[in-house]
Amino acid sequence: MGVLRIGHVNLRVLDMQATLHHYENVLGLIKTDRDGAGNVYLKGWDEWDQYSIMLSESDRAGMNHIAFKVENDADLDVLKRRISDWGIAVEEVPAGSLHNCGRAIRFNMPSGHEMYLYAEKKRVGKSVGTVNPHPWPQDLKGAGVHWLDHALLMCELNPEAGINMVAETTRFLQDTMDFHLAEQVMVGPEGKIQAATWLFRTSTPHDIALVGGARMGLHHCAFYLDEWTDVLKAADIMAMNDVKIDVTPQRHGITRGSTTYFFDPSGNRNETFAGLGYLAQPDMEPITWTEDQLWRGIFYHTGEEAGEFTSVYT
Ligand SMILES: [Fe+2]
Image (cartoon, rainbow, N blue to C red):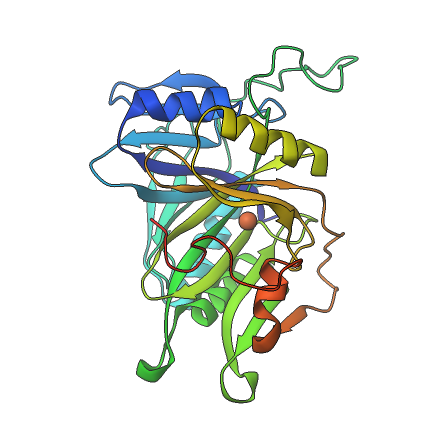
């Protein structure tokens, strides 16, 4: 029971036409719907629910909300009580408030990020079907990403003022929704400040990650590819389409994934992420990265900050 996986993110974008070129032709997502308000919905070919990305035109980039899918409708009642008992206000929203979803609950995590939980979303199926499927569809565009894999959210961290929304939000996710801690970065005197965390509900090292910064925001949303060669080819496709790449293909120490960071036309950071990393299980002892090895954890080969990792986010 409980939270299954990341369901979707609702991104704010400046120019829908340019954005759709990016998400459809470069990443290879499939447009599945558009609503009366002009929001556009897309999914990866390997996803069965109708959408994992919701695009909303706006005059500023960023993320409106993140949504997770729970296993059973009754889980919503249990989770509503647990979140409310934790001290967070929860609102029930009727079926259809989230496009083509059943009833949902809505709240703001301690970090301020708006989150929805829902149990039902319209199903449209994988592109390869479910009977004698081919391993991949032959009409893939661009990088042909499989699915929305995870999101990394920036949370306010200001130890001098006693503010650590990474630690607070991590505890919230663990206490109320039974997220498990896979990895963490500990900094400051005696390494007591939890400055970043990677948490899972599936069996991969992270479904959501939290990193401390000057203000809350969206650092990136990541799309799954099978392997390193797919990450390399995806970066080729980005170059062919003049996509602004933040960090060229390389490996993360944390989660062990292969990665490329890049920006959509509005400046929202995306990632192509390949590999399982490792089998994450609730009884696995969390991995800790110390402050002196922080950048080895993030960019394993150089052990140094690359791109605009900490300074630029939406
Ligand atoms: Fe990531």
